[in-house]
Length: 338
Length: 232
Ligand SMILES: Nc1ncnc2c1ncn2[C@@H]1O[C@H](COP(=O)(O)OP(=O)(O)OP(=O)(O)O)[C@@H](O)[C@H]1O
Ligand SMILES: [Mg+2]
Image (cartoon, rainbow over all chains, first blue to last red; front, side, top):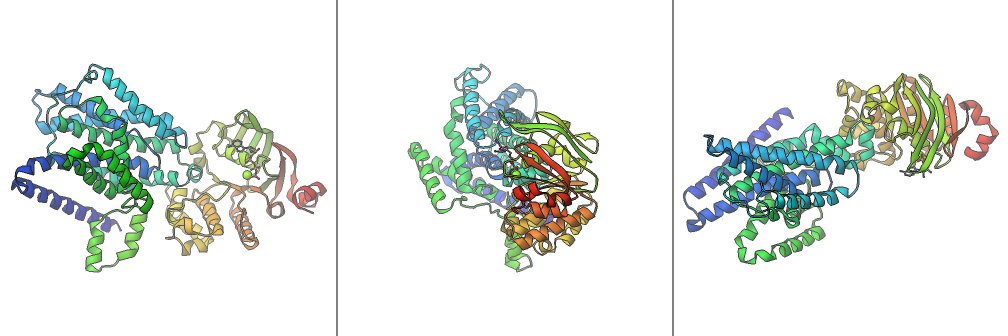
């Protein structure tokens, strides 16, 4: 099992590498002609959206709580990282170091905010989190509209452009890997136990609030990183970008992709973030389209397109080579999913 | 081993437990019986820290439980099998048991082998999702999970609830076996007859107060108990 685990990570890494080189090949050879730059941009958008959606999936899928204010954490991360990178430009740091420091700052700022919101909100059971997070995101928006350091309600522009597709891709890969490992770790399993039976979990000596706040903080941290990539891609932003609609969009991508499936979040986020981009002239209908898709998913596949299923190369490999494992193991793996 | 003195607990403005005192000695099985709503579950929940007390004192092996962090109480080797079969339905039997050793993972393999030896039904189903177990098997799993913490004492809340007569017998014989291995038990039961027949001592509760206490065998013969709880 140990060995299979390592092989699995290695295979997945090879897969990621292959996907990366495919993109490099396509982009460097101008495979899409004049649209290459444009498609590169959309792919970058997909990368940070994946981070944001997967992080929200930690709250919704792993913890089983609804958060309707994830954009608030994205916003905190975006502004914190932009402020840090503005402060550090021209200090002789290489771009990549500057970028990583800024992202880390964004993640930490968002994570700390996550602790502050999580401690009061997660002690309560029920739907309080949804309400508290909406309120939180609104507070952040209003606050950032009034602070001079965040542009005081005007567009904050001139953020140094550090997010290119290649960097964003690898940042996304690292974030997804860490989140996946978190879900599979003892922490993730504990949170899953809490979701399944609160009373049994407390009776087993699990400090319920602690594990919930921890997961919420991890989710906020990665939302902040996603925000940082966003900020350094857009180079200009305004607090109202991170409004309730943005949170709702992220949440619908989680639900459509599959609650509890990181694979689902990846696919859901890439499609749903690039489709509207491609049909920009219809962009005002985007929420409408989302709602329709959401309703259809709810009716026909209530667990989302991927349910709690996770894609795994080792299973494909085992299936192809007919090696032992096949169904039994893969079933176990799915059930042990997020 | 466990000594409760003058405990008062309330839900909001309503006091549910009015000054209860109760004691369980090392190695005993003690039952706590009483009508629905008497406050039995509330007492167990207060002992294991899931509910806050207003006043009183709960000592377990000299430690003041009311001043102990709820998630640390299990470290004192006091386990709780809550009322109503609380298991983790989407996890396998094995994973459920692992969660029982959450605070103390050493000797886990040996503990699990012990539990499987006692509950052979669980062993056959160790890869099965707990939610698909029968009611009786789930109850055994809940007991098994408590045993994973290597407790000195177990609080059991209506382990026979909703089980067929045959399984009720099985559960009670398991309780007795567990006790023979040196684990002290405080048992809350609706099935007063069964509970009294395996207990050393018993307490009877009514609306938040202890109204009777004594030797379990004598209580089985007591007219008031017979009338109120044994349906005779
Ligand atoms: N969460 C709660 N909020 C408010 N009141 C509660 C709560 N839980 C229990 N009570 C009340 O406290 C009293 C004692 O309840 P408890 O569950 O301890 O009774 P019990 O003796 O275990 O009953 P049963 O045999 O039916 O399980 C009851 O009057 C009940 O309505
Ligand atoms: Mg009860």
